[in-house]
Amino acid sequence: MKETFDQKLKISELENKNSFPSWWNSSYGPWNPSWGYHNFAFPESILLNPHFYQLIQSWLPSPRLWTLLYRASRDGYTASQFHSRCNNSGPTITIFKSSSNLFGGYNPNNWTSSGGYQNGGGSFIFTLVNPRGNPPTVFRWKTSSGHGPYDDASRHANFGGGHDIYICDNPHSSASSYTNFPCSYEDTLGFGQATFTGAYNGWCVNEIEVFRVN
Image 1: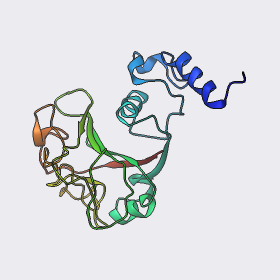
Image 2 (image 1 turned 90 degrees about the vertical axis):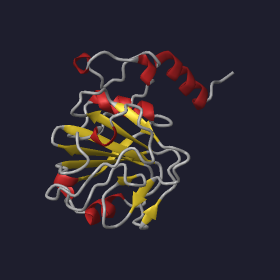
Image 3 (image 1 turned 180 degrees about the vertical axis):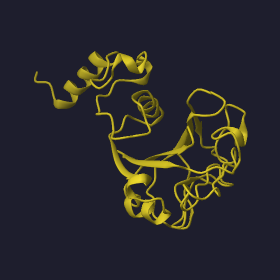
């Protein structure tokens, strides 16, 4: 009986589930088979290393192909420039860099500049590098919160009611961004507003990258 394409793909996945993707190098650290095997090319990023990329892939509902939509230092730091490049692009991962700290969020919905909260089902936020040296950690949406990503034309990608992550317009030159965490996302580490940057506010964002993940 001739194998179908889907059958061959499943066999290939089973054979490779404990293998290294072709872009993985031992210098990145030990490979963890629990991350799952997918051989998507490492995305164009100046913020993520392959370890962080693989971790975020493991947090998504399924492995995705990443495409860079927006980089603040390349495309401009205004919220309007973010929305002009990212609206109606499908699910996205956003990475923020503040000093040496890296954090961000996943929105399974389109950004549309609607001026309100989106359904938070499936969304999450995360820390990759933080002042306390906590390991990379994902924070899932509280189903009882009612507030997911906040989609407004005058702001960057924001998450949660409160907001858990609020990034203002021109965040590289304004210290008006803040993290009122936890509001809509579960704080599994217990460090609250100090989780991402060490402080509720008073910090700038010096780089942002947004990737379409589909």
